[in-house]
Figure 1 (cartoon, helix red, strand yellow):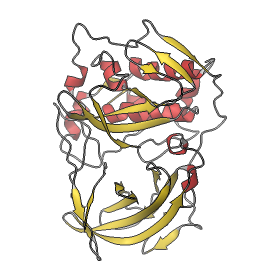
Figure 2: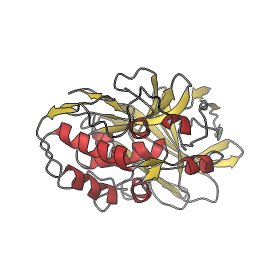
Figure 3: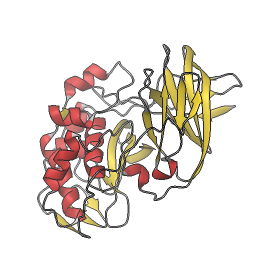
Length: 337
């Protein structure tokens, strides 16, 4: 039986726009075939190529903000792996004890490549797992329902065999839970540099709109697009962004912009999704964020309105590669983290 593979294990930047591959894999009683080629957001120099008519920089001209009072949490909403509650398998485990809080976790030790498959109905995501026992935290990003998680071990080529599975009925405490906590593509905790910077730049912010503007403008004004990194990663796989590393280097590809922005926003209580998908007219694969506030932030590039998920493309805004992205024209959402 064929099942569509909704899988992002790596984000690669290439010199020009490229198409992402959406693979199908076959599940059998003993294992499955999972192609290694996966959908890969493409950040390229073309993202930063601005025309005379396009706006660039921080978007400070004509900005307006509003909203409810900004009251950041005293500490971040963290994640943890509960080995006592986890379902145990051969050198692997799956913890579904926190699914109502928007996440699950798994660990595995193997000399072979490991993947974690997360499925709800007809939708599924596949994640590369560390094979040294380090827990991987993944979002419950497909809404409420019955989730099945499977630890898969590579046998040869794109063939995998199931080592362990676990099923959980997910009823989220809040639809925002997955987008307020860390996960494999958005790592942070109270000791993270990204969290400290978020608290620093939002100090004194009166409204949620103020806080959103402060964080996004910090990323837009200070992080540069890293063409060399894009070229270096163009033939590799398994890339996972590190918000603190991006903050340290003040450079990155589109996935780095999105991961850093989301980590900073989530840490101060603003729900933020990392989204990957296609951008026209060149149909290259890209990464951006969606935010949700009880307030507004309107600029020449963005329109964030209260009570709805609004698109903020930090890469395009930083490089001057997009004049207005708030209405989502030209964007096709594919995967959400």
